Image (cartoon, rainbow, N blue to C red; front, side):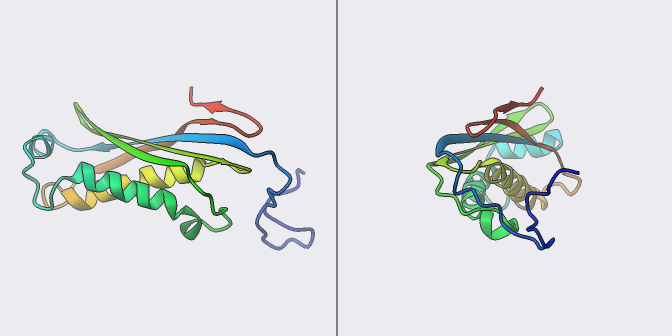
Length: 155
């Protein structure tokens, strides 16, 4: 069996030591989808949602969440992000979210991108629940990562 990376020799949980890894530019992109009905999309477009602009509030919430990922996910390293961004696009059946996180460091930023897009999606739900109760958050996924030992791009 492969040695588990988050356990020490005595089987106790431990944070991975990344001190010997090379410092490289690391970037990750994550995505999510929020499915809402046409009336809700119309209210967003017309800026007629009761709590304000859900897309802009969600962008800020996602960026803030990326910066605090190590406080939310156990054993996640604190990372000095050089960039965190969230984009929201209205599409036919809802809202597509994309989050990007970038750093120069010894560990990746996948969790930061995934946390950003997840919190942004939850924020949109919170901002729109007075308009529509049956909102669906779906397809939270890592889309791409570069830097470090290997790159990844979703198929």
